[in-house]
Image (tube, rainbow, N blue to C red):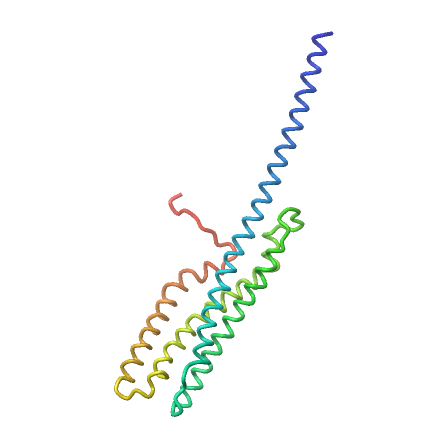
Length: 207
């Protein structure tokens, strides 16, 4: 009987240890899920901050150029219209990118990483993915337009300089044109589609 009692005690102890082990594993899994949710939120927050900050920077530069740049009274009307149109387009696109990114940033920072009534990936896909793509597209369209504004700045600033007008203005436009070509041929071509793709993942090609 003593032996039977010891066996029952051992079995009870094993059951208790197993229950405590299962509780500990459940607690660790919950902590891991919370950490994963917080990591996902932080990752998206950093992306949104980057787009919002750069959009605000470029839009601010363009606004300063539009408002503060001295416009010669004898400037060609067509050139003035083109400059005003491109500058305001840059400001509008960058403003849309900044506002969309800012509103999404506020939204995801309100996500409850502890309770997780909805998975963050589902929340992002249903509520934020389309606006994220819109913000990226606005930013991508605004960059070459910003360089187009730069290409026109030389012809406006140096308009009244008779000796160096053509050379200085052409040099500024050439730099802007080269930047636009590089943007479309390399930067946007390499990263534009990748950033807009929902299923894009970084991977090791050697594996």
